[in-house]
Length: 140
Image (cartoon, rainbow, N blue to C red; front, side, top):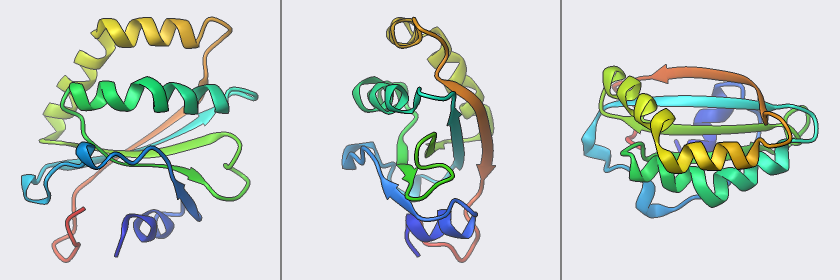
C-alpha cells in the first residue's frame, strides 16, 4: 500500500503529489507518529498557500525536525481548488507539540507568514489527525 492508497482509504479522494523531496522522508525504522493535516483555504487563497509551502514551509519543517512524508492536492472538486493535505512524522506526540511550538516562534516562519498574509489569512480550517502505523502497515 502506498501513500495514495492510505489517503484514499481515509476519504481524501484521489490526490496528486506536491513538493516531494526525498531528503525530507524520515527513515522507516525511526518509528514515531504521523500527523495528517488538511488545510481548507479562504476563497482565492489556494495558490498563495501552495506557493508558501513550496518555497518556504516544507524546508522550514525539515530544518526544525518535522520531516514531511508527503504533500497532496485533491485531484477533484470539492477540494482541488481550496485544499492542501499533508503528513509529517514526529518522534512522539509530545515531540509534535514541541516541534509546533518551535515552528510558531521561528523567525523565518514569522517573516514568511506575515509576508504571505499581508492581504489576509490563507487558511480557514485546519483539520489535524495524529496516527500510529497499524502493525500490518508497511512503513512509509
